[in-house]
Image (cartoon, rainbow, N blue to C red; front, side, top):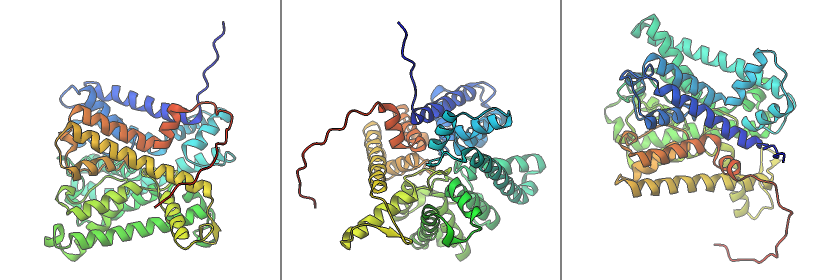
Amino acid sequence: MIRERVRLSNLQIVALGYFLVISLGTILLMLPISAKTGETSFLDALFTSVSASCVTGLVVQDTGTYWTLFGQLVILLLIQIGGLGFMTISLGFLLLMRKRIGLRHREVMVESINTDQIGGIVRLTRKILLRTLVIESVGAILLAIRFVPQFGWGKGLYFSVFHAVSAFCNAGFDLFGNYASIMAYADDVLVNATLMGLIMTGGLGFLVWDDVIRNKFRFRRLHLQSKIVLSASILLLFGGAFLLFVLERNQLGADMSSKEQLLTALFQSCTARTAGFNSVDPAAMTGGSKLVMMVLMFIGGSPGSTAGGIKTTTVVIILMYTLAGVRHERGATLFGRRLAETELHKAIYVFFINLLFVLCGSIAICCVQNLALTDVLFEAFSAMGTVGITTGITRELEPLSQCIILFLMYCGRVGSISFAVALLERKAAPPVTMPVEHIAIG
C-alpha cells in the first residue's frame, strides 16, 4: 500500500520554517561556547532563540554580558533571518548558487512577504537583499561615528553592525549590558536619529520601498497601500510622540531639557512600533504612557516588513469602515479609492484574534503568578507585537509564564491567523449556505 504524500500548504511551510530556525538557534545557544558561564538551560536558550528569530527583543539573560561573541553572532544571525524572513534568505542563497527557482518556492515566497503577485518575485527578492545590505551598512557607518571613538575600532565597529541590524530588523537586542538598552544615549541625536531611521525603514515594508523608489518619491503615483502605510506611520509617530511628551513632561522628563524631552518622546513613539529599544525606563512611566505604548505596540508596523503587530493597514481599514458606517455611507473610500469589504473582514479577524491572544495570555500569566496587571498586559502586548520593550518582569517570569510569552512571540511573527490556519488548514468542504436570521446589534 502506497502512502499518500503529505503536501504542506504555503502557510504551513512558513510556520514550519520558523520552527526549524528556532530549533537550530536553541541548539547553538545551548553549546558551552555560546555562554560565558559555559552552560545555558534549555528554556533560556529557547526563549532567546524565539525572541531573536521573531525579532522581539525580550530577554531572560542580558545579551551583552551573558553571551560570548559566538552566542551574540548566533543571535545576530537569527535576527537577520527573522527580520527578512527565512524564505527570503533561502531564495537569496539559491540565487547565489545559481540554482533554478521553482514555482513552489515562488509561491511560498509570495506568502512570506505578504504580496499577491507571483510575477517578478525573484527580482523583488534581489532588491530586498541588496537594499537591506545598503541600509544596514549606512546605519552601521553612522553609528560607528559615535561608537568607534568610545569603544575602539574593533568593538566599536562590531557594536555598530549589531545595533544597525537589530534596529532595521525591529529586534531591539542591544549589547550595552545591564538590560539598559540605549538609556545612556537618551540625549544623543546621532544615535537616536540613526536608530529611528533604521526602525522606520524596516517597519515600512519591502513592497512600500519598491513602490516609492519606482515612482521616484511622488506620493500621488503610489499604490493605495503605500499611501496608507506612509500616512499612518507618520501620524502614529508624531501623534504618539506628542502624547508621550505631554504625559511624561512633568514625570520622567522633569529633570530633562526640552530637547531631551522631545527626543525621548519621539524615540519611544518610534521604538514602540515593534523595535524594542528604550531610551528611558518603561517601568518608571506613567500609566497613561504605558497605555499609549501598548496601543502602538498592538498596531505595529506595516505588511511585508520586519515589524510585527496587527499592521497599520488593518487599523486604517477598520477605522475607515467605522467612519463610513457612522455616516451611513455604502462603502469606505480613501485617497480616491474604495476599500474592498473582503479586506475589512480580514482586518477584523486579525484585530480580534490578536487581541484575544493577548488577553488570554495575560489571564494565563496572572493565574500562574501574582504580578501587576499593567506589567503583564504590557509584556503580552510587547510579545504579541514582537516589540521587546518590558517593564522588567521578563526575568521574573516562571517557566510556564515564559512558555506563554514564547507562544505569543511565535504567533506574533508568523501571524496569529497564519498560525491557526497552518495548524488547522485542510481541504475545503463543499459550501453549504445556511438560512439567514437577523439579530439585534448594539
